[in-house]
Image (cartoon, rainbow, N blue to C red; front, side, top):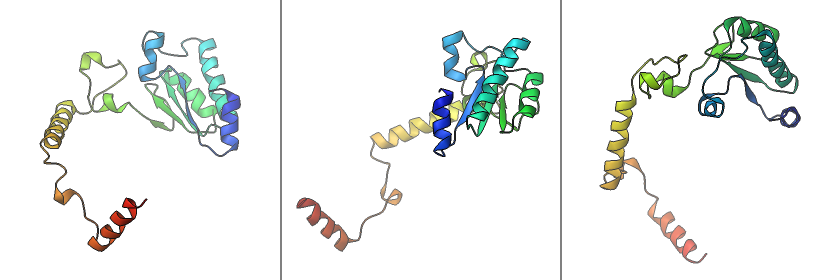
Length: 165
């Protein structure tokens, strides 16, 4: 998104929450995977300048991903908008993690280094999806108790009207 588009959106009261630092999740494949950002002063200033431009053009908050604690601290302190960190640490206003990582959807060897699984939910999720699929195919779900009927007089009126539509 360009700053011009961001400005138009902000001027039209469309809240935009952005992202600076490394590319996130699925986007990293375009640049060879997760990479730390802001390792040099010049790189760190480039992250800051982008964040500052976003702020000045109307962004209401942003995520900063995979910068050092020091870079995260300096940028979060300098900006007026909320800064949420991913694998950046520091004094950001909050922290986030991709739900697939947080809930352990991937095997540990496939997770990014900065991720941490707080639960191992994948087996239960697969079990739930398979149960749902089986009941739908066997016409057990949805059952009568999972829905409701229409008043018969109103249903008759509706069916007559739709027939003549």
